[in-house]
Image 1 (cartoon, rainbow, N blue to C red):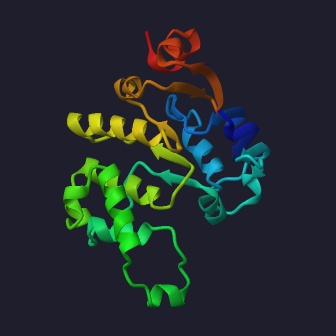
Image 2 (image 1 turned 45 degrees about the horizontal axis):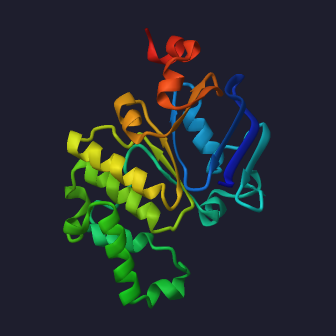
Length: 246
């Protein structure tokens, strides 16, 4: 499979503290990858760099077949290029229904005229129904987002990202606060999504990571210290010392 995102030798410091230290990372098309590591390992800063929120002091971040530099793009341009990010805390319009949240997220022109004269089309309604089915929310389309369970809110936000038709999804701690059945459905959802786009999951829950059955990247002190299957990285002495414990 071809490489979708390639990060080479990025470093960034905040007030003298090196949050990312010569980090290199790559992910292929339609790959599911988990990133783990202790607090302060650089996981959030890594995602901030990929999505344009933070610019590194050095290194390159290349995207797609044309090797476009994400460092030359704004956050909005990076979303347009095909990278979407879900933060740990859902950011929904809680007074709007699931259907309305998904409708607002559809990838289309947002200029004042098109917004003013927009009329729901059969195609848009069909797309919303497809997304709702994908994220286990078909039965909840008329429910206000604020009335959903925590897990359902996470699914809705993933659905809102899917409406943008991304090639890469960055998902931060999806399992936090979920019930056991919701966690199981979320594992199935992420595996399913990785058949059509790449998915990076940042998570602390080792049982959840194990269920994903994917390649794992371990960060510590802003760099990669191990990479491979969960069984493989779990036997790495440095990973045991700094993260998993004995």
